[in-house]
Length: 139
Image (cartoon, rainbow, N blue to C red; front, side):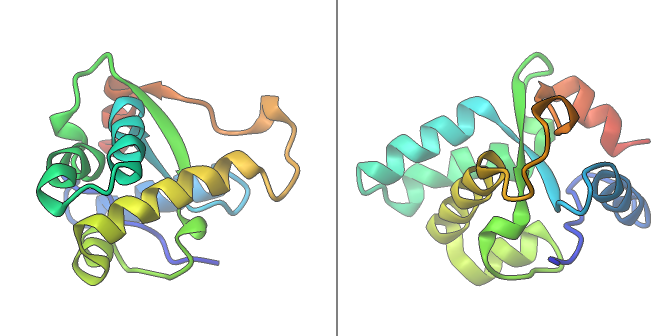
């Protein structure tokens, strides 16, 4: 199982609580939420052979929820789909680079959508607004 992913903009010590709560609620999934618009734009840019400078502003919206409007839909991703374990999102970006991290988030979304555990849809984590995600981060 992947290590817990601390979430940016959370007080020290709180990120472990958030990650544990999300993981327990998700039956072992290593959940993170990302902007629906940002991940769609990342997929489009990656398909066009995007450069780092094209991806960076979109990746910033994925890694820093404070840059997302409160009414923006946020989609669950399962970080086990990245294929490597990282101590934090920041560590992942540092290790994989901007484009590699963007590709990793796409894989994490695809992994979540594949539903490898065969969970019933009504029991799976659901999309939420950015405001709801931000509130979860500060609980």
